[in-house]
Image (cartoon, rainbow, N blue to C red; front, side, top):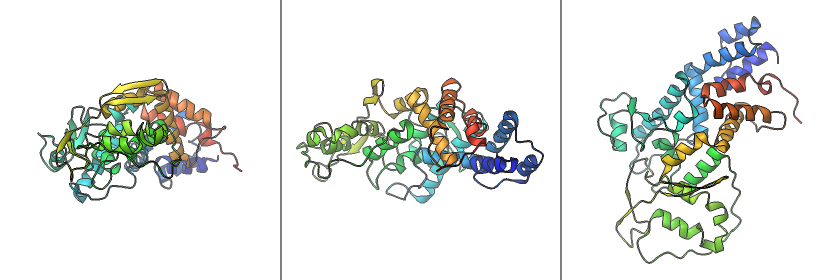
Length: 343
């Protein structure tokens, strides 16, 4: 591409807007040619406010919070804004401090003020300003954000299926088609109080509809159940109302543990923190992150001519885990600075 085309591609890719005067001046001086020049410019852009906003926009697509969260019981508009700010500040810290893929999921910190901390049941946080707070395994990282938990829930109840699909599709790039059974067999419920997990296992679990639903739901139900300690408003809990509470008005303990299916076999997990530990080290997840970022920047899927770029980015995540290097690897690749006509 010409220097001005490169400048435009860089700006839309890493800032989400038209080139600024500084970038256009560098194009005019032919200072967007070498890998070093391009890498330095990407690093400059990703540390600006627009660059941080663009990366956070990618994060929002990655964990399906891009459509926002509606107000619901226990979750007000102002609290949703605080949750959105929590996600943004994590993205900001990752960009400004050479964050890694692992830190994205298991940072051991999050951003809270007194109101959001109280919503999460965390003590010792005061004031209205959001600040970085060390947390235990119940918080910290993309899968432990209140925004993620609320966005993948229904209005009042959690959704094992929505949460399981989000993790499988977004973190492992597994695609699910439409259900093959238009009319599954009517479920049979136990004559007692049941949890949300037991309800869904009755509807589409291993024994439901002769196991036909389970072909896909084995990747959703147990995976989504790993997040059951977080209610539809993103609050941590140990118990839930029985799914059939009207008939059996009692609280039931939550079981978030179970099998987690992977290409290499099944791994037992205690809860979603174990999945957060798996993702940064898993080759399928590394490739999925690389492919997701490629699609975000280019606006289309990788093909035969660009698959090598995605593989190289995934290899970089495996080797260093650096998110900044992921951005630079894409922006300095031949797939980025050379264009071919597409039929």
